[in-house]
Image 1 (tube, one colour):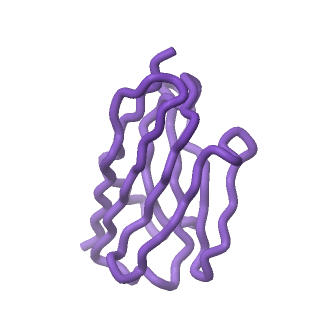
Image 2 (tube, rainbow, N blue to C red):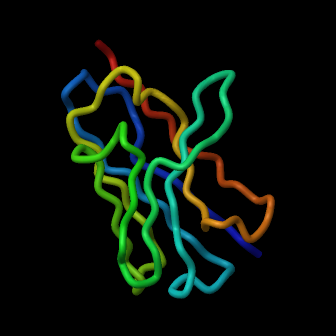
Length: 115
């Protein structure tokens, strides 16, 4: 059974940093592209960063130079290092494969950036 457990969120002042982790189980990990998504209240969930099976990364323009996605295939874990956080980064953050393999989502982790 697929399980995604996101952690590492919290309340931080603008300019601060957080490191999110996503532990995946129940499906093969190494061959998939993995992504971090975020969802603001009232908005659709969207990708902010992606890492493919070769380690190539892609970011949306709003987080380039501030966020870094990485993966540890031995631990079936994806990370998102977030630096220079801004109030507009406030959202619930989720990880998943991209493209999605199912409709399953973890519980996400709340990131709140205070101005």
